[in-house]
Length: 198
Image (cartoon, rainbow, N blue to C red; front, side, top):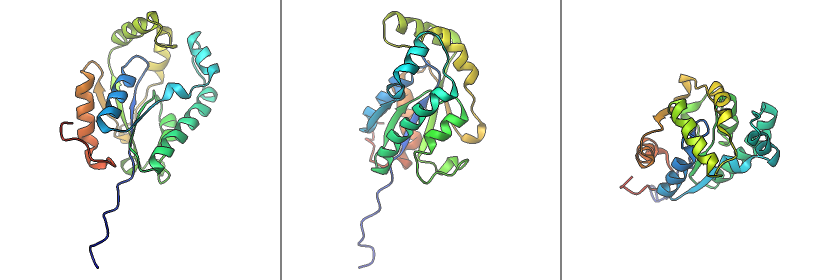
């Protein structure tokens, strides 16, 4: 009978909270995953021990260092998207070419077709002074391998093309408010029903 077929489920959506180290992306992405009832991927968990050792010594990563890291991250995101799941991701994603590797987690993505890609980015921005203070505090608490000395190299790499349509957010805003606004922005594209309180 016509009209009796169940509606097709929407495919999964990956929302990547991006920015330099210390901007608060892991906190925001974890809260976003909680709000959406989806999995959370921390990109730092996909770095090799060699990459972590380099960064902890204050040595910036090369593109050769980043390639296998980004590819393994792409695989993890693709697994969620292929399963029709939403996923919240925390990743620096500083340059367009890095974001393109992550966008390719969406098997139907065609380079430059940002609007239809199932991988979306939200960039957290704030002053270098605020981030330096956060990084120094985290480092003194033993909570991260990235020293504040690498901040400038990350700031130098961070480039966003206006055509990408990436939302930029003030990282000093309360994390809960950033999550609320992010859920509202992507509500129509999410695979699952989001509680109305968000």
